[in-house]
Image 1: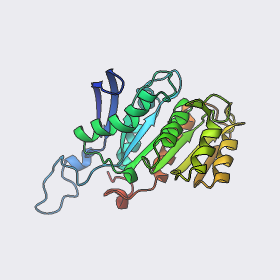
Image 2 (image 1 turned 45 degrees about the vertical axis):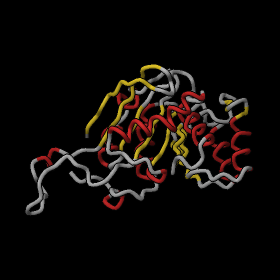
Image 3 (image 1 turned 180 degrees about the horizontal axis):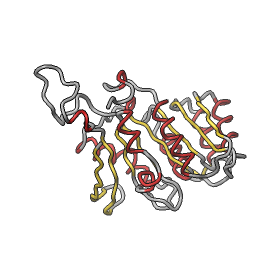
Image 4 (image 1 turned 60 degrees about the vertical axis):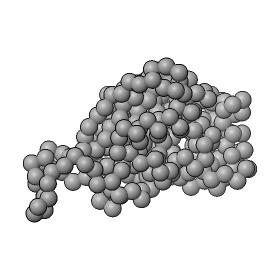
Length: 253
């Protein structure tokens, strides 16, 4: 895999910002020519554009914590998915400037510099805790932008999230009442998590409203990185795929 740390001037944030971009590349065995067909040459030119996951951090974290506390780079390599990591301080990713940055400027910047697709069917968003609520905000504000959303251990329905003056529950109900299409959702929470009393209820609300929801929970896990490491791989296995790399499953070493 290749990992890029990019600092650039953002037109949405009106300041310099740093993102990390993980892009699948050839493995060491592949670099030796193993598996090449006769006449085929080694190249770094990808055969197709990669699907992309925008992965949001939790409160008190930044773009680097997903990389430092999980195996996200390994998972991106194995499942042939580009991953974009960004920071939003403790804004909950719910300011207008952060919304524009995530849903407009980042796809613009990433697709301009990396072999990454901008098709909605190849675009996914997920986050842990605060980032899960932030992922929901982007989906509600810009329907059709993402094919799937992942929400891990978020405090939705706790009263923590207010979206443009509306509670998270009312914002979701309004979304469905307006006939908008909610993307496929993967929601997960540890049974020892302090959000356990809330997130299952949020899952039930989405199901009641007609959303396509996959729910996962594990005993013995709280609000912790071991759980999120498990869930981000499950999410990458689960996401609906129609890109060039989808038929090949895991990347072969």
